[in-house]
Length: 70
Image 1: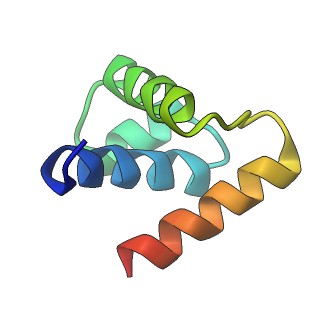
Image 2: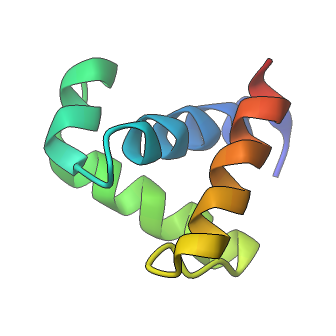
Image 3: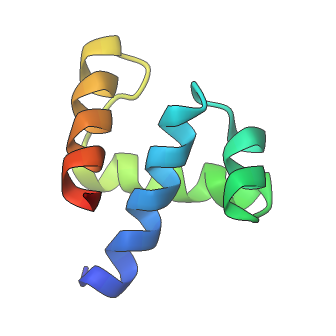
């Protein structure tokens, strides 16, 4: 996956994590439908093999998103 496809997924994931896993609040921030947020989060979670329900993995993913998007 190239940067043009990865950046929107990472921004969606970051918004989702910043809003404590709320697809609705992330969707409001990103001007997307909440189903789009849910689908993107599911896709990136599968791609990176992360369990976002695990607090340690969730924190690691959130820090990685912030570092990459800076």
